[in-house]
Length: 98
Picture 1 (cartoon, rainbow, N blue to C red):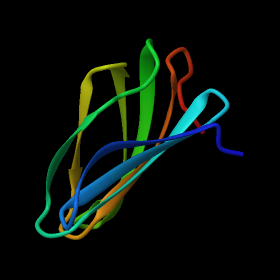
Picture 2 (cartoon, rainbow, N blue to C red):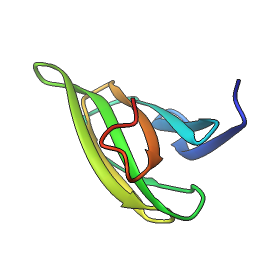
Picture 3 (cartoon, rainbow, N blue to C red):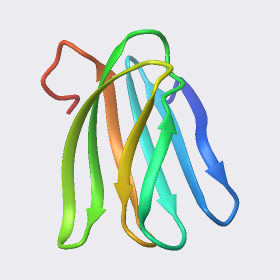
């Protein structure tokens, strides 16, 4: 069950980053159209320090990365041409959100 849904970033024909919350965890999904690039995603989430587990398209397959960011800040993620990423976001204090 989803408790909240937000558009974090997007531009028609270019990219979209959506966030959905279930309980205390957020699930992010993104897709880009066109060349590979670094997306700067505003983390419009409740106050706190957040652990972000990212899985993204890479040149040789899927890449898993982790970041720790503050709510209200921007986190960056590299995406491949016509690619995207998925992420699970939880409050810090856990080593993983999975």
